[in-house]
Length: 350
Ligand code: ATP
Ligand code: MG
Image 1 (tube, rainbow, N blue to C red):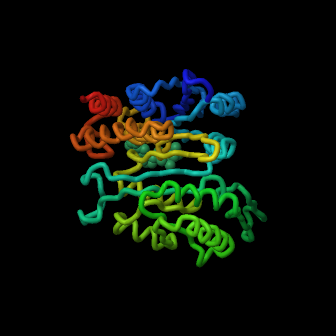
Image 2: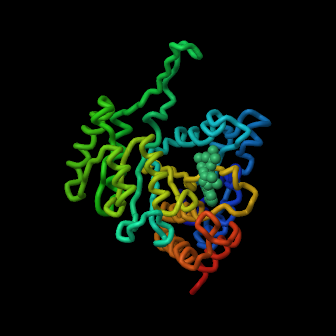
Image 3: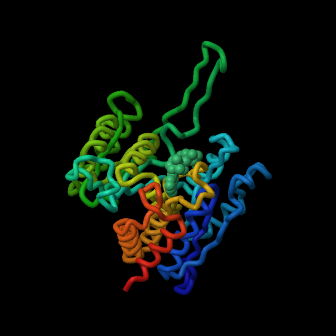
């Protein structure tokens, strides 16, 4: 913000496992786009730091991220650590502190060959999951009693607020190209379901020119797995969005190609990351697919208003896929660095 010459800073958290491996080619792509950004690399935000100090993301790290225009994250996660405190400490802190209430997950088939679907006429997925990112079943509210006894009970609160629901629905409509589909389970989860339905009715009335539909999550899963071609924007809560976006990623070629944005469309704060985690099973082998991270850079470019550059990245990825310049998860022979180089070569092609 400020003068025309102000440099746009991108905070970068390479993280753990394959995170740093895929961030490297992603930063090369960012560099090649010539957006005039500078990076602030926070490479100490990782599991090693957490194991040493008990704190992975400090207040001063958050300040550096807050004073940046956007953040780019590789992945956090480590098999040495339980899956709660560390990952929650980084990802959830970022999402909640920056109030990144939208999780935006596009799924587009870059090449017919990447689809797991048998019927060629039903393969062309091109949709976006808009997942509520701050409440729902992942609110962290709950508890247990009589732990370890035969009478043990556990409660996890599925939180919905009018504020939280209406703002994510509003974003979904703003992101629609053709239509918005609400996915919920209002027939079984009554209270939250009714709140979502009321907010949905109001949002639909505010956007009379956008086609809408409503599906229960079980039906949505079936529909996606058999014929995903009709979907545009799918808006849903935190947990259904988590699950359905893995499904849409699989329909578009797998976790390796899935990109995401965590957004606060009101404040403009944004964090971009591949959908995959730290993938400890392949970390260090040099074979991680960098497309998820590279396509996250395309979303970042779009966020900065550079739609042409974003499209150029997507065309370069599509060309690399078409040429078979891909990693083993997509059936190709190349390593992470070679795929990065292939995308750069496509980008520089006149
Ligand atoms: P985390 O706990 O950090 O989420 P994880 O064990 O759940 O790690 P994911 O990263 O979610 O692992 O990956 C799940 C599976 O998908 C793993 O088998 C992994 O090897 C594979 N995978 C994920 N990302 C990629 C990628 N970029 N390239 C190739 N394979 C990937
Ligand atoms: Mg995972």
